[in-house]
Image (tube, rainbow over all chains, first blue to last red; front, side, top):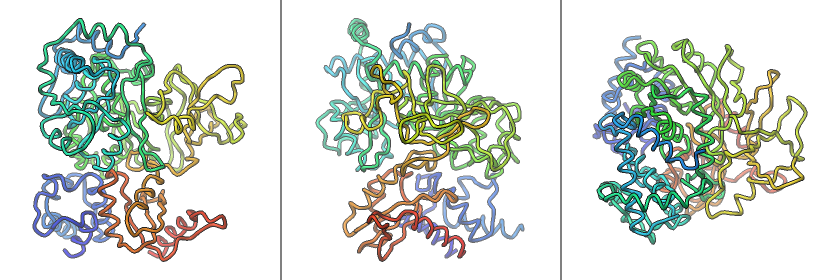
Length: 76
Length: 507
């Protein structure tokens, strides 16, 4: 989780990722961020996020995104 | 003969009055509504005495914004598309260049515009469209208009830190749209899915092709370009059959394996531009849609829109490059070497454009206009302007034009045209920064900023966010003790580039 929070902080230093759960809905993350995130997650966690998982619900909070990473790495 | 872009709308409104012209996921507007509301906006401006003026359209990306554009032209003015997502500092620079007397706003953007100090007045779109139409006044405006009058100004990155406003007239837009619709095969059955922001010339493709051919344009919500499956679902839901997107929007779909779960069902024409389509991603698209037509487009804002096209007609292997093909009808491409002569066949030259498609130049900036809109050096007989793109190209063995590289520090990043110099100027304005240099890493498609100064990288990032649009923000920022210089005392970009590559090897 720490690694993920750091990746997110690097994108938006001014956002409290530990509490915010509307990262997509309130327009904090944009398409640049999503693409960067997916690439960073792939290199840091060795997890490839498939297209059908690239959905707003999975990116709305750091917690949801971390749950997705865990689920995908367990499936491997 | 057609003299005014609005003649497109006036012909189409007679053929398809009740057909949807522009829509998003919530609202749609028919050709009749576009026609009537645009005339109301034109009348409103005319009654305010605003004529032959730049009129900023500061509205959310919405069908109404398109109506506002045409309304501005009905009033005999030229529109300047701007959006709230532009950073304040940039909006200020543009307002300073324009000194607009009128800004058209929606309810939300009006509050933002009211916080800027400029000499003009902000008007609400919703009030403007309620104006009773004055047919006689609009007819008078039309009668005295000529086809070299400007219809819009679109701002593009400038290496001095000040954006350049490219002004285009009826004639060049008509020339472009006639030839573009021909190449794309646009007709009344065309359903566009628009991706590009209205403040780029790229959106002319959908906006004007729609009123010319009686087609329909769906404005795709920007947020969908983060979620590839939802994006393709949108294309299918609205039966979108034609797209003209920047390359990163297309590769976003193919790179994540979207086609394994869903495919665009109606898409038959895929045009793309802004940068070179990586062949690996391109082949994924082609495999997913083997019957679709793929068209590579190339052209600078200064020549209205696109100047060259290549309809993909053969297989490409990784390592090969998609050519930009041949010029549109009524446009001529000249390759020129450093001496202003035509280079030997197959050799590199600067891509220069000749023809009606040339825009009028940069607004209130004769100096920078004269640097790139120059006398054709091959013509010693009479005045003839060409536009020097700064792009270097060559002809391949099939006689197709191929883009090779830039001759300066302009890059294409995430579908946008960015002058690295503009970023550097803005970094240098930050207190505590002594020196700055931006380098583009082609492999990872990242803008890397190096700087020297008494300020943290975090602070530099925060400050830049206020000054530059999202797509111009460096992807990584590195502080240096000293800036490497060449023997001439210039910043050694080559060394900085090597430093990035060395860093990659370490990993």
